[in-house]
Image (cartoon, rainbow, N blue to C red; front, side, top):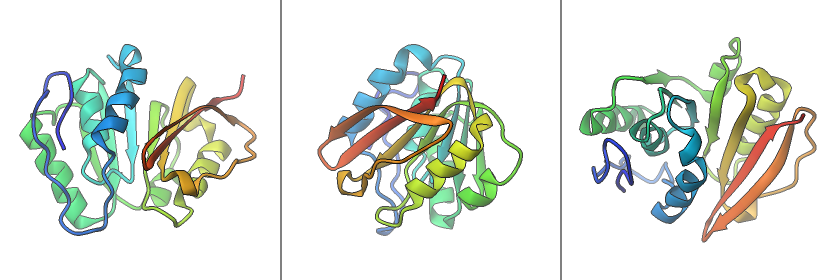
Length: 182
C-alpha cells in the first residue's frame, strides 16, 4: 500500500493491525484518482470510515486543500496519524476520533468529495448514503459522494437529493458515484 502520485508519491503506508479494515486495492485507487485528479487541487475531502487514511492521504498528496479523516477505531486512528507523519501531509489534515454517524449528526460542512468505505456486509454504506441524502449540505452543489463496497453489497437506492451517476467495478471493489440532483 503506497501513495501513487503527488507530493508523497511512492511513500509506503502502514496497515492497521488485525483484520478490521479493508484497504482499497491499488488498482481501484489508481482508477478512482484518475477520475478525480483534474478536480483535486484545492478541494475539500471527507474520508468516512477512514481506516488507514490512504484515500484521504492520496487526495492531500495530489493537492487537496483539506482532508478530514473520521474513524473510531483506536488502532486505525494511530495508523492514520502515523501515515500522515510518514507522508509529511499533516498540514490540511484533520483526524476526528468519532463514530461516523455521530460526526454526521452535527451541522453539515460542505465538502467537494465525501468518501464512504465502511466495514463490509453491515449495511453501513446504505445508512451513510441515506444520511447524506437527508442532509445534502455535506456536499457542495457539484460535489460527489463516493461509496466503496464489495459488488455483492450493492443494491439500488431510492434517494431524494442524490442520484447515482456512475458505477465502476475493479475486482472485489465497486465504486458508486453519487451527485446532488439538479
